[in-house]
Each structure stands twice: as structure tokens, then as C-alpha cells.
Amino acid sequence: MRLAALALGLLTSIAAAAFANVPPAQWRGVPVLMYHKVDAIVPADAVGRDLTVAPASFAAQLRWLRAHHIRTLTAAALADALRRGQHPQRAVVLTFDDGYEDAATTALPLLRANHATATFYISSGFIGTPRHLSWAQVRTLQAAGMEIACHGTYHLDLSQLDRAEQMREAKHCIETFARYLHGFRPVTYAYPAGQYDATTFVVMAQLGMRLAFTEHPGTVRSLRARYESPRRRVRRDDDLATFAALATP
Image (cartoon, rainbow, N blue to C red):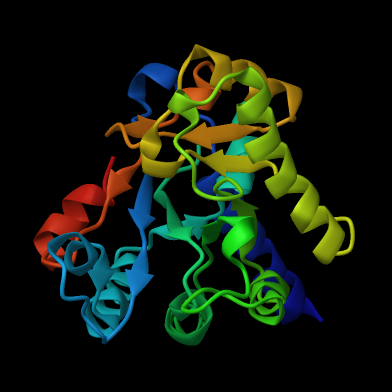
């Protein structure tokens, strides 16, 4: 009993340290990393190739995070920590865009093996179509502790839509997840191609999004610009040194 109490105390201390408050001026924020595919099959086109990280490379990146005691958070957990006035230390958010089937077949087993978590930004209109996740696979991701979040319904460029169209594209995504995931409603959003405009901020607020992500570089340091949050893209040819720089505030 005494050993169990000591172990629990140690774990509690570690968790508290990870979310310890530090003066904002000294805190450099949390990097949010953007992936698309983790697959051994390399697309022939240059863009697809650049967005497809080899499974061995992704596994090495996860091992690097563990070796350097950098914990993985979901985007929702980061938003909640910031809302509580906390400044997560030695943390990173891993995100995956679009909802390709390798999220469940390749990325998830590697995440589990390395005790890591991630946020999956899925375009709900493509679920069940070739090369994309099925609803069963989306539920498997969720059951494994991964965050399911919105990437629009049909991956439309929000900056090219009027307010009603933006609302329809985003709201339908949220409502589709609520319908098929037993009432679950996503709370974070990633803009397709990182595109948005001033109207988008109004739409995100009305839908209750806690964070929404662009493709601007940087780290997330506060909720002041919560609908213009930055992400760092991970590319196929990034070596571990490049990854280390991306994963470090």
C-alpha cells in the first residue's frame, strides 16, 4: 500500500510539472505538428510524396519524443489547459489531416506502441470512400483515446465561401460526427489548405470551437488568437534533426 501511494504521488508530481505555470514571458508555447499520411506506399505526384511520411520515420520520431520526455497532447487537451491558465511544458500536439485509412492501419499502431496520442482532422464527407477511413475505423481511433476533429465536410477552401456556405461546410461536419459517434461533438477545427477569412472566425465562435488551426508556422501560446492557431508541417524528407527543431518550441 505504501509503495502504491508513493508511486501515485510520483505520477501526480510528474503530471503537475508537465502543466506547471511559468511566467508567460518565459513560456515559448506548444508546437502543433501537421501530418497527412503515414504509409509505405509513396504517391507518384510530388505533393502526395511530400505529404507521405514513411512508417519507419514516424516511428523514429515517436521514439525521439519519448527519449526526450516530450509528452503528446490532443488539441482539445491543449485548449483546456490554456483555458485553465496552464502552460504545458515539454509537450507537443500531433495532428493528421484529411482522414486517410492509414491513420487507422499504420499511424494508430505506432502511436499505441509509443504511448502517444494525436488529433485526427477528418473531412466527414469522405468517410467510407476509397483510401479514406471507414466509420468503424473512426470509432477505433476514438476508442484508443485519439481526438476526432473537423476538417470540413468536403475539404472546401473556406476563404472562397460566403458566411452561409462556411457555416454549412463546418456545421455539417460537426453534426455528422455527432450522428455517427453517439452524440460526440468535435471541439477543434483545422482549415483545409489553411485557408480562412474574417468570416471564418465568426463561424468558428458560433459553432463553439475551442481552437482552429491554420498553416502559419509558430507555437500555440494562448487563446487570444484561438481561431488563427499555427501549425508546423512535417515532410517526408525531414530527418530527425529537422523533426527535433519542429517539435521544440
